[in-house]
Length: 105
Image (cartoon, rainbow, N blue to C red; front, top):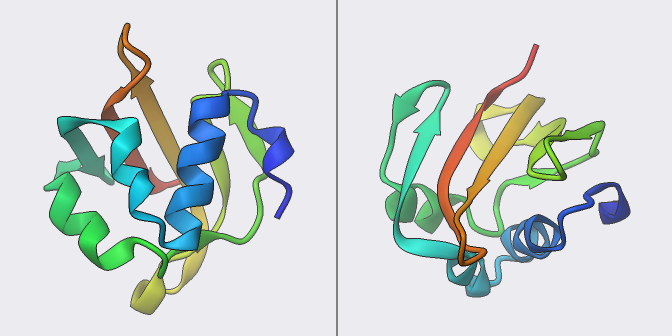
């Protein structure tokens, strides 16, 4: 996986932690970040309790918004493989306070 396409260093480190099943993933976020999955609000911690280390990008196809919006082919466990977006929202302290994910067109 070529993470070098991700120009935001914090996003890059967070995605590497997610894919490696490293609990440091949570350290990149505020204590109670807002999260949406295909536009529906979900609980961040319970979502990633299942996804951490199990779901991963197979390719990074496009990066936008100063490296905070990542698009690519994604293996989502039992849900299969499809094109997704991860949109990270970074606060003034450098932590993510919101994450929007979903299927990309």
